[in-house]
Image (cartoon, rainbow over the protein chains, first blue to last red):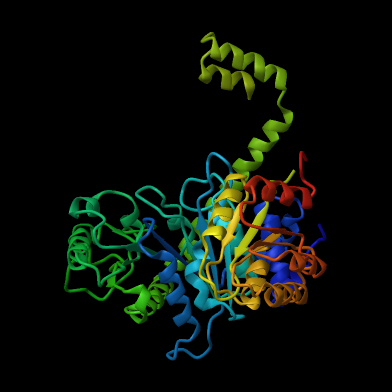
Length: 339
Length: 135
């Protein structure tokens, strides 16, 4: 495998970028230099997460959203948009069928767009282990907006909240009643909630149930990571929030019909509003710091395990493990013997 | 040590809408542990080449039932070469007359599969082509 010059990636060489992503994904040793060289140029992109249950229309939404972001009459320059679309890896065969591109055919032929499908490769939080590293490469390559579409997520796949600045949770009518809406999990991480397929029966009920849920939680926490203790003066807001002295983002609920492109304008506006809100309240930097810290800790953990594996005496492991199987030694005691 | 996975793009160029074969092969290669990207219907040579580049695939599988293979396949291979993908393995599935198979192979197609091909043949051909059998 030839080494990749990070400079060519900075200059817009798409093949070099793509090859670098493969190296990163496969944990190839050559990937370290590229990542290190690009890192100083990162931190500029707006990271937008799109998550939601399977079949709610995430890919179709991303397709429409990207189309509008690229051709928005309201802005001066068109931002370059990258999309990372994560789909699940089979736990049985290790294979994956990555089908998000099917919904994104409108985006073909635009050089300002780069789409990469990614298999989750055993990670359980809705992303792959290397998704954050992909973000570093794309950010360093100069993409202004990076959209990260998670695997079809249910109630616990909330890793995206630690990665993205803005999290869009996509719902669709008919997926559950108001009790679903007040459970813990995915709705808690939403900065923007989209009720897709708003032309389907029951859409009004979904919007209403979600609105009631938000009224109950609004003010208790803001956008997942920004907790209410960050006191920043705020224009007193007449409605809903219980703690007028804390920064508070009101999660909008937007009815959208992705297949027809309806409601996408408002979504683009809200994404931009959210970025402005984060920047105005110094939350952008806080999110960045929290993310980098998480990345760093994950890398340290990974390396520590590697180091331990390298120094491990296999025979000793086998003999201790044999004792565990025979219930002569508990797993807790075994850890002390093996570390 | 790297965790290399075989990545395959399955594409349907041209205008026919019969994608059952493409789906069967996509699903089968998934079950052989590969990461399969399916592009959907009616892809132009440019779209296929660009998708192959962005996804950095090792293999491109083309499913064609329209009879337009003699025009489409060389155009796709040209596009792949044009954007720097010279080592990508290309295979074709569909209803391809015997004399055309030879021509397609001359234009750079690694293998052509007709109806009834065992999916295991396709999977092991890919592994062979990538020289990673029993690696």
